[in-house]
Length: 174
Image 1 (cartoon, one colour):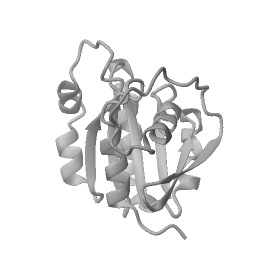
Image 2 (image 1 turned 45 degrees about the horizontal axis):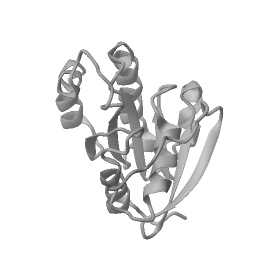
Image 3 (image 1 turned 135 degrees about the horizontal axis):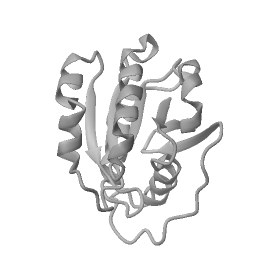
Image 4 (image 1 turned 120 degrees about the horizontal axis):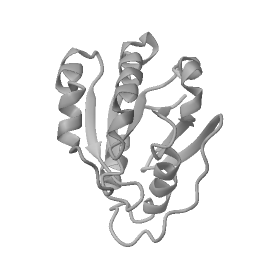
């Protein structure tokens, strides 16, 4: 099981829909067309992605963060999404990330931190954001294997890399 977590409005639902769109080609190239409509996730959504083995992604709404820990069981990988176009949300996302990384139930999980919305203008670069939250120090001290990626779920940029990461970190779901 892969958990997809992040604050409300960071693009988690669109990411899942886009991953399903690029799966037939698997290369993430070509025009994905206009993004599909999305609504804020209230509760949880399960989506199966086959790359080539089945991976179940459980997306939890950002408003559910107080009860995220009840979903850590059987989690082998974690996608944590940050809105790279909203630096004012960065400190809250950092607190959420630190809570996830210190959770005993996620100690063995592989983690991919996704900086989404890189296609939008922002007064801070992703590198500046990583520095501000001291991401290199967080990665050095964490028990988990942590990777980062800059993506645009809206345009499809970087999504092939997310699929490859999911495939590389997949463990057999029970």
